[in-house]
Amino acid sequence: MERYYSLLREATACGLTVIEKKFKSTAKGIIKGNKIGMRYDLPVIEKVSVLAEEIGHYHTAVGDFTDQTKLENRKKERLGRAWAYQYLIPLDRIIEAGQAGVEGRFAVAEYLEVTEEFLQETIEYYQRKHELYTHHKEHIINWEPLFIVKL
Image 1 (tube, rainbow, N blue to C red):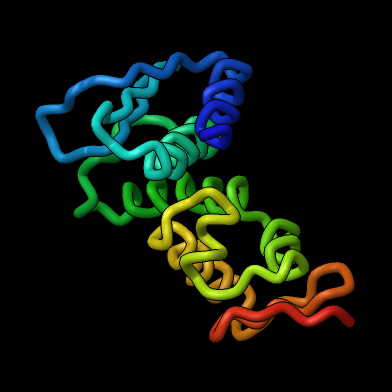
Image 2: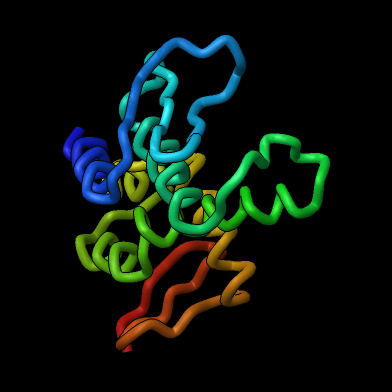
């Protein structure tokens, strides 16, 4: 999948090394310093969102925040995810999918080369950020149900 290879190039450009390996834990990805560990047995489409999130952590937060019982760690986790949402599915790409006539969450996720779960999380992120709809350039993006209207 081209999207994954593009993210690998992005990681390299940032000075990051990505290593796919077997994990003892249930983690899908982890970053430590300038190294990202990726669970080797994930489907490629899932590796896209995991790698984007780990690159997002590199850009937004440092340190060990695996203990999600701590509020500060949950905030750092959300920052990495928000970076991934905006990087993989910026508003322009959602509009592009709408203009291409792509309908339905499965088809939109496939068009954007992400999992349906990641698409749903991204929509929920944008809903929290923008409420019911977003005005972007010459379009209105309604979040629930997802549809785009050109003004």
